[in-house]
Image (cartoon, rainbow, N blue to C red; front, side, top):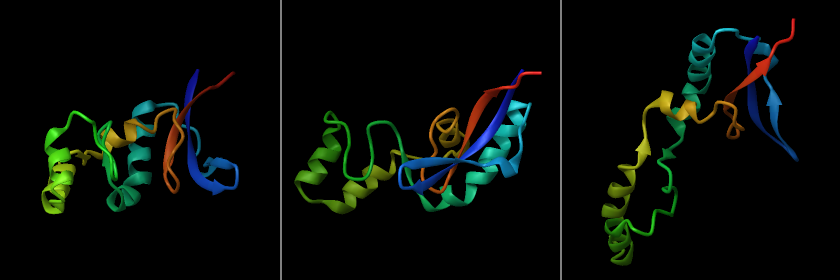
Length: 116
């Protein structure tokens, strides 16, 4: 049987993840995922998550618009173009936290095997 538990991203001087047992074990993925979205909601309002290849100060080499804005030091345009690559769908962001390590201060969902 498969179950789902939560982990929490910590700064533990070597231990980057801690179990979040206080939220229990879920047997239904949809309910567990809904809880994950709820748990991460406040942190997601404070942070930006970018599409693959984009982030604070970097972008794909083939993005000529961003390269030109950076070269010309047109920071207004640069910021405008970068904002196009921010993921705003919370469910999409949380999908990245399934069976992966959570960011500091956020939760992830881990699949476990329950043995009867």
